[in-house]
Length: 453
Image 1 (tube, rainbow, N blue to C red):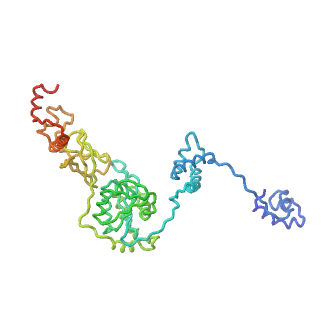
Image 2: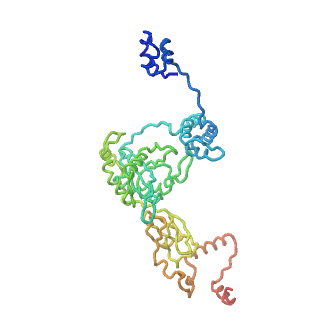
């Protein structure tokens, strides 16, 4: 059947057909077959009609049932990439491409969510909320590409805080996301802005939330988060789960920083990344923000002016961890090793690490902890932080040992005495008769028996 455009072009030769010109001549002029010219010029002018084409089978059709079942079982949360990976091996052996699966899931997911009565987070509408100057800031982490350092690749994270009224940004690049680093980044942000916002919005990160709870339940906050917020005088607001638009201002800042500062550049140290961000910051603050329509730096003057004042002394957060001393008088933390004095500990002894952003302190356990060592914190995995004095006199296996590896103790340490007293006290309260002897009695008995055999 002739396409409509060609039929319309052929109708220009209808006057020749009405005058009796031969069909061969008309066909020569029109560039078609004489039978075609006769068919469409001898009848009344009516364009050809095309009916709907019969549906052609698709490669995805045999697999729609299993895809729908996975979408229903996961309540629409399963990703199209996961579905495609499951369809490739036996027993399915899907012959199509990922694009076919992606298109089907994109069209089917909203329908299944509607059947289940589940709201689609990607399609939820929300109200735009304007914030008064100094009233709010938003915080988020960005996970960046590793950088190549002389000691090997290092993972880098970016901490972001944005003042909600003006979108005035702050960014700090670091190699850790632990508790001490998280709150140290807050302290640096407050000094950068010159004050403290009345409220800070977070997602449900483990450095703010102690554990996850369901909707409508009170969120238990981390004790250090509560103490830090009370010291600086701001309120903590935790977003609903799976609602990134609740802190969309800082989400946009993460993407903008990654595109404007990091894209296309190579760094060998986080200090270079930080310098690049500070170099770009004046350019960002001089721009007109597309949402509020003002220059960011101009609007930030009112935002910063309304911030709360900084306390006289900063709050230093210390993260605490329990570790075991190894036979080499080393303690592991963050994939790095730290030394302790070998004469004051024993293999397998439990110690407490008090970790800040720049320092690692090691203490004994008990009601009266003793400080064993203090080290500068290693910022690259696999480091050895060793004080040579801690290993002074420790056998290294290169020469014959003439005496005991550990000098005989004159008596139990203070910690051992406290533990022994506590155990004896518990037995006494339980009505258990405990015999008490002078330790010298056991020494004499050991000598009489000729020592250990």
